[in-house]
Length: 414
Image (spheres, one colour):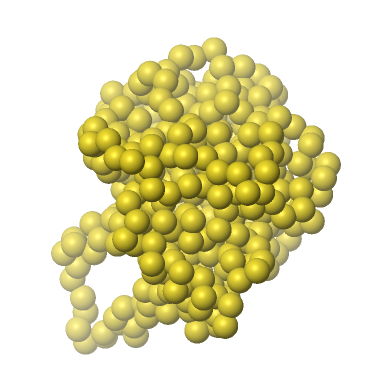
């Protein structure tokens, strides 16, 4: 079995010292392509708490492999760097890399990955070549690194202001259900976010205070006029697939990569737009907020995704777009119509934003979905023992991480 060889090779990596990248997040994704045998020598890594560590001699190299027009790194090279060990699942197609603190699950020929227990959508599929599982250089720099080592991302000042953008408005109702419409729910959540964020010490700016229509470019200009700030756009989803449900979150697609919805990896998607100087920070913001949302709600995990929506494309500060459930799905639409549910959604978003600020200013490790679930489980719950629950616990997957159900509509952008 090809991947058994990968697992054996990865297990040997745990004895190799952890070294840091010599390039900033995003440096892996430079357009200049080195030779397939080239490498970058890293220096000693800082400790996980952000403190300085003793200098050490480099003992690993990033070995870039060129396949067609793209550059890749092997799973064992990644495991060596992050001190991960590996195991292959029963199908022989999926490998899990873990060190007890970080977890990375990859599947051959798939753009879907689990990073620290949450679904992520890679820019390019994982490739199996010459008995090696390969991850694109763009995904290592823009998807994996920001989550496994968020403390290493470049920082620029503090986070003082949050710009909240309630999607749609005025004649643009957005998605609709029998209970209400997207523009109304988005504004309600935005208004609920304001006092919660202010209580945390943030200055809050709403792009719209009332039921008015704002052009997308104006929303971005409002965000770009602020300093020491982040941008959070609130939306609710809809699709012709009435079974589609759950949360998803977006940040800007990196330059030279396709968006999540571009299944064909079409060249025009790759070349249509430039990226952003803060796309790594935007992705980290996506991850911290999404982990909080999924950690506080039993919603279906549709994943952390990429898109070139106008409000993300034109915004020059870290920016994300949240899809808080489907108005086209009966169960989701009932929940969204509940004011208490929307209040809890706002609280989870604020918790994620605060986690991002702590990671930015204090270099604290962001909480993960599993951490939030543990907190929720520790709360006292009264059970009706006369009617015990049908299932006392969710059976673990073969790796002991959250199983993700298949979703035929998961690549459809709103």
